[in-house]
Length: 465
Image 1 (cartoon, rainbow, N blue to C red):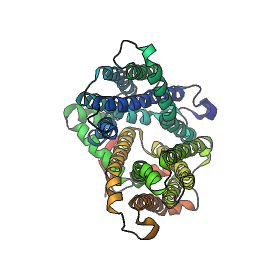
Image 2: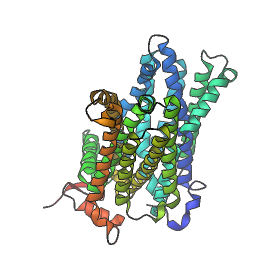
Image 3: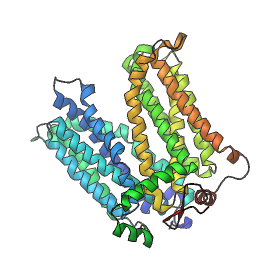
Image 4: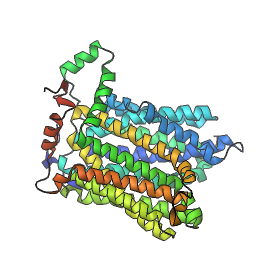
């Protein structure tokens, strides 16, 4: 049951109350996680020595982070929708604290991969549980602001995490002089402390218990296949309910296109714009600033937005157009300006998408919905990373004139893909552009009347025809 509106105000979201504690725990653990990301890249380069190029070496921790989402990411949603969510987050935090300390003693790629893989598994178990409890901690009118704050805490801490890693690497010798690599060891110890602090904060929180119907509890007690059915039911719901499917697919496609820009950004700056590494830095900075501005805008003014689905679609349209226009520029400054707009649209789309899922998905399905989102998003990024370079080589000379360059062509196609996805989302909800906006109650009525599965009081029942 949601906290009453009168008990919390917008400015109190990060100052007091259970959501504030959840937010601070995420901010602290995300900061440590970014430090560990950079530290594992450095460790992979150190392990490789002169045998591998550093760009190839960091594929080991990167793969270990992406692979769990493709293989077992949805398991986190089943856990979030079956077990105590507070306990799940605490176990995941303390477990990650122990595992990240083990990285201090890692000296080969196999161990680096296995430990990073295990850390990511615990992260994937924690994420759906965290997202599932957000609507239970604050009034629905503050969901947009809360999601803006959450996403800023998750991604806005990247520059600070990079700076902290650089500082620890510089002064690690005085912090842990006995270690073989004091900088890396101190970085991993820092991350372990952040996970412990996060777990302690969650331990002090009051989180409503998940209600599981008696029929579902009885079913799980008698049949070990019940969790598998939960997983299947979750995917059926995500793919069968249009208001959820559009958000999940839209965000995954957005990451697919953004992944291509990330991979090809450096060759685009060097080979196409002739701007070198400095131009690439300007473009990446513009993207990060744009995402932050979009999320901040939704945090400050998102409460007034009632038509979430049309806004989500229009934001993707803007992202797609901006990426395509960026590919057609001839200067780093021009590309950065368009990328800044693309980043802002991405920030708006993601805050809106998360808020919509929080608002329209029932409590007993929320964990599986966000687990599916995270799994699709990781899959989209991985495919994008794998295909971007190959596609650029294959499309060299395919188009005439300015776009005969394969890098330009792939970036334009990625932008066009996002544009078409956003346009399709707007077209699907075009009736919401006129008249009264749909309420969360309206969405529940539509969900219960859908042709896929009707969800009533946590039970699964086939729709009566």
